[in-house]
Image (tube, rainbow over all chains, first blue to last red; front, top):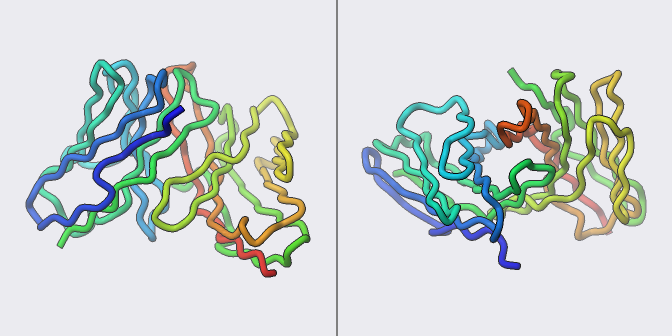
Length: 112
Length: 115
């Protein structure tokens, strides 16, 4: 069974630009969650999508948005990038009700 | 407000000995707890979980203990191996009646297993 696939692995963007990250969950998993990891803040929940609907959202500004497609693949978008958005962005795939969430390898975003 | 806390940023253990990683939480309504292992520049790898209605779960070298009255859980690794060296995160879930899968993570503990 293929794992969670995140693309791209690495990104360098300039302040003010926007970026789109992609996540393909494990086959059959309908829940996709996104997390931001920074050295100072640990792993912070961004949002969760289930069957193309956002079920929950963390405490991030509106510049962070996402969506989920009918095949459960998800994208995350960050607009008007700031230096503080530099982080490892992780996607987690789960069955309908999570008792274990499987993570992708992450996308390392660097904003310069 | 840090609902899940790992108060030890690092832990060093000799190979073959027991590693005990601790985690405290503040919300008594958490439904499930999970432990993850993470290497640099990689995603977390699921290790073991425990339901809030249980007090122990074991899987090979890994055992998780839950003390609900103390709002405390711990991960025991026996015997510890050098390949166990990584950052360990505990996480908690509030199911909100099944409506969401939000994991709340602790800040992590760096485990170093010395050969």
